[in-house]
Image (cartoon, rainbow over the protein chains, first blue to last red):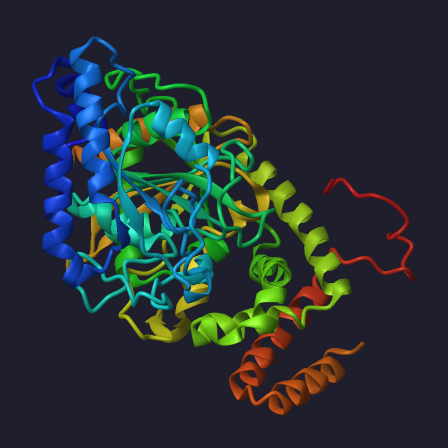
Length: 450
Length: 57
C-alpha cells in the first residue's frame, strides 16, 4: 500500500514542497493503470481534478492555505452528489441523473480545498456487501482480483489502498465502510448516526445510513471526519496519541466470536494478546439478544429500501441488476407488524450495546468475520459449516448501525494468503472523538508489529 | 397473519409474476420473520408483563 497519508503530505503541500497537481497526476496515473483490472471507478473526473489541483497550488502559493485537506486527491462513493456529475449509485436506473448541487459533505470538502478525482464503484444502491452487483461490473480486490474487495463501498477501499486517491468518502448502512476497509487493509470510520449529514446521498435506509471516511490511518480518518461534519479542517497532532496503559476495552463474546474464519479468529486473538501485553485492560461483554440482530436489521433495511424504490421498481424493473431487483421485491413483502417488531428490537439491541459499553472506553471485536470472499460465492466455509456470504459479512458490523454508535475498523494483520484482517472498535454514543483517540493508540501498537 | 399463510401468498405472487428467485428468497425471509416473532422481548397483550414501557427505552 502507498504509505503517504494526508497527515504526512499536508505539511509538504502547505510549504510548496509538493504540488497538488503532482499528487493529482500521480493518483490519475494509478487509476489509468489499475482501473482495467480492479474496476474501482465509475466516473473519473480528471479534468476537474487537475483544475482544482492547479487552483489549490495557486491559492497555497498566494498564502491562502486552507488546512490539511487542501490539494489532497480524494474519491467519492458514487451515491454521493457532486455537482455536475452523474450520481449513478452503480445502477442503470440513474443514468443521466446529473447532480444539481454538491451534497453537504462534498461542499465541506470543497471548502477545505480537497481535489476530487472521481466517483467510485459500489454494490448497486449500496444494497450488498460484495460489490458484485454493479451495472458497471464487479470491483475487484487489489491483492487477488478473483476476490471481492467487500462492499458496498468497495471501489473507495480499492482507491485508498492502491493510491488511486489518498482517501475516500463512503456510506455504511450495515457495515459498508467498515467491511471493505477490513477486507482491503485500510481504516474505515462509521461516525455516530446523524453526526455527518446524509443529505444529497442516495439512501438505502435513512434510519441506518451513515456517511464517513475510508483512509490509510486513524489520524487521516479523523481529519476527514472533522471536515465532513462541518467542524473545519483541524490538523490535530499526530503525536498526541493516548497510551494503552489504563485503557479499558471489552471484547464481545458469544455471537461475535463463534462464527469467525480460523484466520480471522487467530488474527484477532493475537491482536488482543498484544494489546493486553501493552497495557490495555480487556474484559469480556455480551449482547444478550445478539441472535436477534440479523432478523431485526433485515426487516428494517428491506422495508426501507423497498419504500424508496417502489415507484422505480414498477416503472423500470429491468434497469436494476437482477439480484438487487429481487431483493427489493422481497422488501415489499415485509408486513407492517413485523416492521414494528423490528423497530422495538432495535431499541433492545441499542440498550444492550450501551450496557456492554458501561465502564469501558470501547468495545473490541472483528470488523469482518471472514477474509475477502471469492467473487460469485454464495457461501463460504466457516468452522466446519457453510455460512451465507452476505450474513457472515454483516455479522459484526450491523449491530452498530441499529444502535447508531460510532465504530471504526483498522488493519490487524493478514491471513497466511496475505488477505487483510480488520479489528473493530466501538465507542460511546456522541463521543466519536474519544473513540478516535482510542483507535490511534491501538493502531500504534498494531503497527509496531511491522 | 401466520408466517405459513404469508409465505404461501408471497410465493404465489412470485410465481404469478414469473420471479421464481423471489420465492426462494421469501423462504429465507420467512425464517428471519419466525425468529423475529419468537424473540422474548416481543409484546404479548395477554401477558401481565406487557402493560407499559420497559427499561429498553
